[in-house]
Length: 115
Length: 112
Image 1 (cartoon, each protein chain N blue to C red):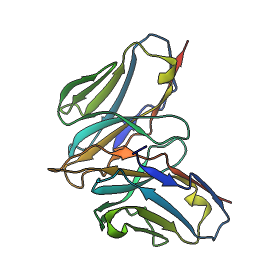
Image 2 (image 1 turned 90 degrees about the vertical axis):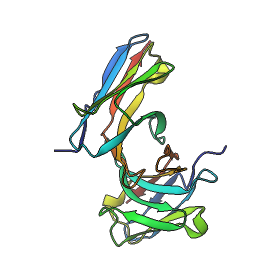
Image 3 (image 1 turned 120 degrees about the vertical axis):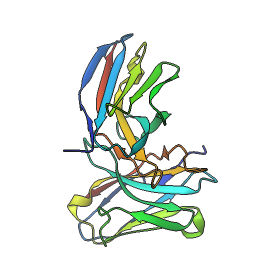
Image 4 (image 1 turned 135 degrees about the vertical axis):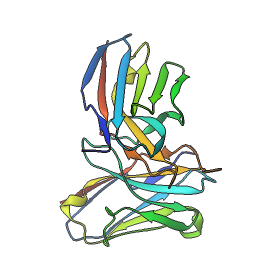
C-alpha cells in the first residue's frame, strides 16, 4: 500500500504524559500536513511542511505541541504534558504540490485518548 | 459565524435515490474546493476536487461550485448502502496550499 501511513492508530495515555505520533507520507510528496479532528467536527489545520521546512503553524498548536519532518520524509507530532482536551483524532495528509496545487490525501489517523 | 457552514444531518435516503449535499462559505478568498468521504473511525478519502465555478462529474458524483453565491454542492446518483458515511466539504485559498477549512460534515445514511 502506498498511501499515507500513521502510527500508532490508537494511543491511550494518562494526563501529563508525553505522546508522539508518526506519519509516513506518500512517497515523493513534498508537502505534509497535520490536522486534528474532534467528534462531530471537521478536521482543523495544525501545521504543514514543505519538504523539511515547517512553513505554517495554527494558533491551535500550543507550545506543548511540536512537529518535525527531518530530511523531508516522515514526520512526527509530539504532545507534551497531555491534557484531556487533547483527546482527538490526529490526521496526517500529504500532497505533491507543483505549480501551486495538488490533491491532499489523508491517512487513517491516530486516535488519542487522554484519561 | 463559521467560515464554512454544512448541515450535520443525518440525511437518510433510500437506495437508488440522489443524495444532495451542500456547503456555504463566507470568505471569497477560497479558490479551490474538495469533497471528502469519511467512514466511522477512518481518515477522510478524497472524492472530488475542483478549482473553478461550474460542474465537475466523476462517475456517480457531481460537484458544483457557485463562487458568486459562495455555495458548493455534491450530488451522488444511484446511491448505495456503501455510500453511508460522513461527507466533508473542504475549501482552500491560493495562499498556503493545503491549509483547508473543513465543514463539520454531513452524515448520510442510505437504506436498502
